[in-house]
Structures are given as structure tokens and as C-alpha cells.
Image 1 (cartoon, rainbow, N blue to C red):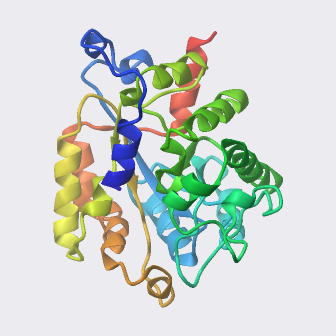
Image 2 (tube, rainbow, N blue to C red; image 1 turned 135 degrees about the vertical axis):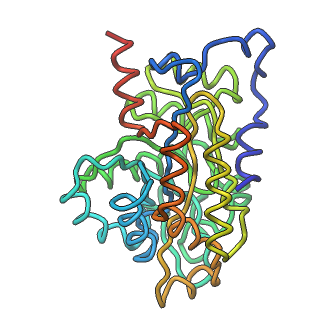
Length: 306
């Protein structure tokens, strides 16, 4: 995850000047106070498997998760529809997916391999790593696939409150302009932070909200000790900076199948347990952190346009 964030923050765009550091946070621009610490706890990978769906549902219903995003090419997306029909106000975005990284569990580009050959490997599946996407896919193909994933969500009647990028692929310099283009055109908020300089401001000027910080450290917290995982989250929550933080987590609920898919990465299960743990909830309450959603960010941004 840190590798993904480094890609996001190291894009060869205009850097923030010293004067820009004195500018109000995007949280302030959206109406919060200068010292408010606003937090979106965002669960990625919904639709990837039953374990991901069940973990996300419980973290939304009983835990701290405020927002999720769905991997539209994946087999368990239909299994998510009943939850959305019962809970239509859920903050649900698209985890735009250009890779299929597991050995025995794959998915294909929704635009079709004839339309996006650079996004299809020898089996017709999406490539198994970001490097292959960069080496073989064109920006036009990537844009086609983004639009195909949006179209599938719309066809299935799923709301789209925002978009982000699985494995950070769309944060690569080769593709980020298309990600921004589609977001602004369709007025769907996208994950974007100020450290990409001029492009973040382009997103704001295009009518969309921008967050101030992205927290993706949990992917590197490779511990299976739940108490330790909870303590890491409690510390992270207590030390949030002013502005809007987008905290990326993966609420995978253990079952008999998920370990066969992802190689028994047991450390991922800790996100799920930490999100429903009363100690983590208490940390949010005691620290005065304000929980929010991408939907609320969009509503606040829309008010500024009137």
C-alpha cells in the first residue's frame, strides 16, 4: 500500500509551493473548522469475494466503516446487490479495477478483450500486476474500461458515490488524466489529494471534492494479533491531522475459501475485527474525530457551486 501511495504522491506534476501550505485545507473549504479532523474510513475490495462482502457489511452495520468501493469485474458483485437494495443510502463507490492479481481466481475486462487488448493477458483476464498494465495498455483502453465499469454499475442499479483505484494503477502518470477526465465529466468524486498539486486543484475546479490526507498504512501492519491491530488503529485515529483523511482498509471476514484465494494473508482479517471492536469506536468518540462519507463531501462541494 505504501508503494501505491508513493506512486500517487510522486507524480511528476507541479509541487506545492510554500505559499500553498498556508492555504486552507480542503476540509475548511468544504465548511469544517480549521482544526477539525474529518475521517472517511473506506473499505476497498467489495465484490471480490464472499469474505469481502460479508466483512464490509458487518463493518458498515456494526463498526466504523463509513464508505466502501466495489470491484465491478469481480464474481461476487451480484452478491452485493441485495445489501444495496436494503441499504440504498450506503456510501458506495467503484474500486476501478485494471488488474487481476490472484493465481487461481481471475476476472476479465468488462470492455471486452477485443476493445481493450492491452488489458487482457493470454487467458483474456486483466493483467496480474500494475507493471503489465503500464507496459501494454494505452490511455484510450484504460478510459474505455473505466467507462465499462461505470456502465455495469449503472446497469445493475448500483449507486456510484465516488471512484478510486485498485492497486493504485490509475494514479500512474500514464493514466491519471483519464481518471480525472471521466470523474469531472460524470461529476463522480474521485480519490485525489493535494500532493499531486495542480491536478488536485483541477479536480476541485471541476466541481468535485478533494481530501487532504490518505492513510494506507494498515496494509503494511502485517500482524495477526487483534489487540495489536486495534492499538495501531487507535494510535492512528488519535494522531490524525486537521483536514479530511481518507483511511483505506480491507475488511475481509475469514471463511474457508478466502485463504485459498489470497494465500492466507491473515493480517488482512485484522481490519475487519478492528473496525467492529469497541476500543476503536471509543478512540473515535474520545478524540473528537468527525466521521463522514464521500457522499457528504460531494453534497458540501455542490453547495459551493450554487
